Length: 430
Ligand code: UGA
Image (cartoon, rainbow, N blue to C red; front, side, top):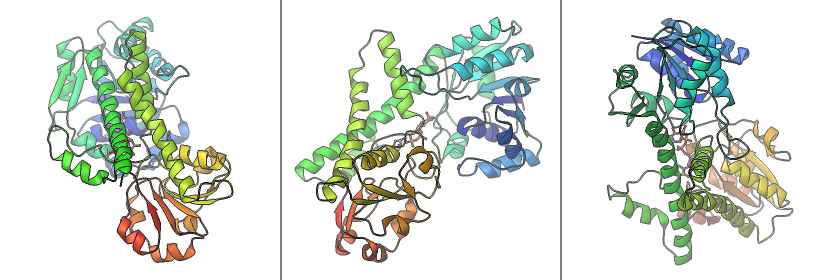
């Protein structure tokens, strides 16, 4: 078992640290935020992620997991140091690498001989080489190695994705480094792809861009289905049995969002542009996504009789998808903002996000339950696919609304049942 440092205790870093401790490694996880570290040291996990509190508790109890303030503290004595810091979208669409650069400079002087620094943050192609250069400039000993080990964790199922991955990708110039990193995953059953660092970085971007393309594709197909009176759900069922297509990432909705797809598609477009390649297909994936949000606003407008000004809209779901508390780049938030801009009054409920959305969207009223959101509304818009929304008392909801109208942007509800209750129901592509 190995001594591992993890820099960053966000969604990726914390999952990586807790799961590696679960696999038997001795892990020290660092964050800059002293309050966060203090909470984590007591087993208080500040993010909503299934199974993570249990793994953190297990690691703390077994003394295989510790939390510290500052990257250098995690790197001291470590054989492997994972960099899991934020790489947000910069003003030019490229990734902002300041946190990564700072972490590399901070750990360089304390790295022990033979240590391997592993990039897990999603970073532009060429960043592993950049970290290597920064480490050396900042005084790392000469036999320190670098590798890229991109993550494929979905928020909400990150622990499962880490422990049962579809594949593990390790990119390193030196095969012996790639082999050492792969050995960290010895107890995980998955194909291991070892490659060079640049290809590993491309695998991450290409995977996310491809998944975003699938979602934009099915959203466009849903729009055509609406025009020709087909049902997109039947269409996807008939497509998905073809193993070359599959069923996953073909649920139409209000567009993709979150902390990854928007940032990663923008960064890949930027990489392509810098290489003088016009990635027209990916540009269309992004613009189709923006149009989809506008289409949902259009459906709400239509449901209000053509005018949003003065309308009361109840919203269910604010996070970018279900089973997370993450509001970053959420299509729901952007749709709510557009409804407010058009003069609607919006009252929303989300099971994961709590009332944080009020800080992001001035004028939005967040209420503590789904019934309160729909009460007195002209239209109810379902923007996130939380399972709990299926099981509510729709008779009560129908009775409490000013007009019985539903825009179901996630195709979560049963149209026949809703129409039976007297709702004017609008889904996506059906
Ligand atoms: C995504 C990838 O799925 C992970 O493999 C990757 O590691 C991660 O980004 C990352 O780069 O860190 P995540 O952003 O957590 O994970 O969420 P997804 O489950 O991929 O969903 C992304 C967006 O697409 C959400 O807004 C979701 O609602 C939307 N989506 C997804 C659909 O609208 N339809 C679908 O069928 C699937």
